[in-house]
Amino acid sequence: DAKTTQPPSMDCAEGRAANLPCNHSTISGNEYVYWYRQIHSQGPQYIIHGLKNNETNEMASLIITEDRKSSTLILPHATLRDTAVYYCIVRGSQGNLIFGKGTKLSVKP
Amino acid sequence: DAGVIQSPRHEVTEMGQEVTLRCKPISGHNSLFWYRQTMMRGLELLIYFNNNVPIDDSGMPEDRFSAKMPNASFSTLKIQPSEPRDSAVYFCASSLGRQGSGSPLHFGNGTRLTVT
Image (tube, one colour):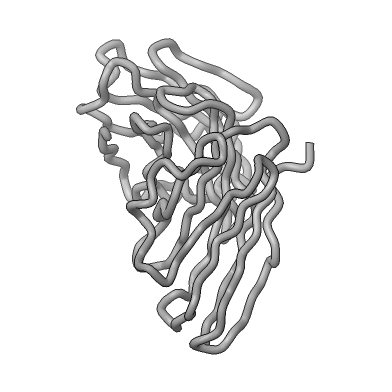
């Protein structure tokens, strides 16, 4: 299964866009990129996923590079409630999710 | 949509006791996953079922851990005997589909287990 690399932490000002990068250089052609976040010790919350094309939903946008070796999660207008650990995951061949350490995003007033 | 339901939310037990964690997946989902989260090791996949059949249990720590899925709407994770190092938050997740699926996993709110 492809591994991902994320910065351990990031800060973002409230109301600004939060851009969270992820590298997945060993991704294979049929593997999806998933983003989850976890607030405190709640269960991981699904945000968005994509294969090749950019995706947008009510929570965020996902930009995947043409070579699919990296992606960026964009929270367009970050709020204090978006403070969480964000996980970028490439979904394995068995369909399971392998979590890394993620990026701790701190949204500051 | 009730989401994935786990019980109990908290469990405190003494070393050596049997512990059973329960999970009800989202109706219609055919894949179920058990994860464990600790500060030291993060989120670890323990076992994965598809259509009630265990597909990958390579993450189960040792024989003290066992998981069953007797039907599509219920799964248990049992620890016997429990040890202090089993203290963690245990998450259950479910999804629709299997290999190469574009269907996301949906997680429950977890069971916080403390073994004294």
